[in-house]
Length: 361
Image (cartoon, rainbow, N blue to C red):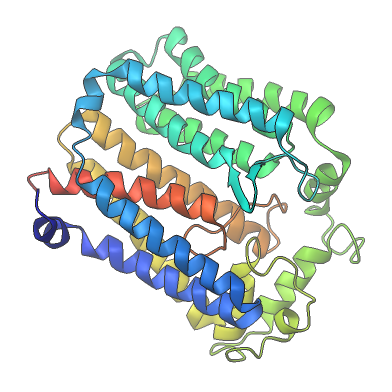
């Protein structure tokens, strides 16, 4: 397939939504961070965009008949997560990044891609037998193994994303209510195990702080309080580029990653925040529509799994920016700074654009 055809037949509504989110994120970085972060993120976008174009040229349909290849990718991701736990240096108290010189790679991002691939190939063949306990157990095992390796890093936010992906696949695969209840019971038992044996004290403090938001404003609830002040004081039009008080004076933490939505909203107002959410929801809806129109179950499930991933990120990130969910360190896709997350997201988009190019709709 020639380059001009690839450009012409892509889903440009999807690209436009990503372009708006990229511009918003870059503007926020330019306003609130040293310029090196702006240029680094711009380079990641250029590299990721080129990678997405290259991936769109590949016909991924033969993967449907090669489950061993998909399982190989999944196994490799598990080995990377294990290596990360034992070999990675602690960065901000978390062992999530393999480091080689100046290069850092968050292996859990690759594991997200691997989980979506393996669950897509699994449910494309087993969805008619979703009522069988064996299928539920196998799919739960696919989720649980990487989730545990990530939770002990410790990275509760990404572990919750993995649960969102697995649970979302159960919903779209047509699970019965009694089996859904059984899945929730299993998750509740696993959640109790995580709470008593794996979660750190600071993670428990963040969760319990949601139920008492005004307590301990200088420690447990400091981040959330500053985020709510930034968003609540923005007004409709915002305070203007470089004029956000919470952002510019250093009260709002992690303005490049976890709280970039609050930082952007403070300077660009409710209108800017609404446009970011509108663009992101457009992105999700477009991916869902592509999936529903796809010609095979694997492509359909891959698109829907990607939409579940992005939606899980949106709910958690905006939730703790607004103070209605615990702060779990989850980035806002295409808006937050970070090469690993951005490249993974654009990898997924590249495969989806390849599905678009080879579909008849």
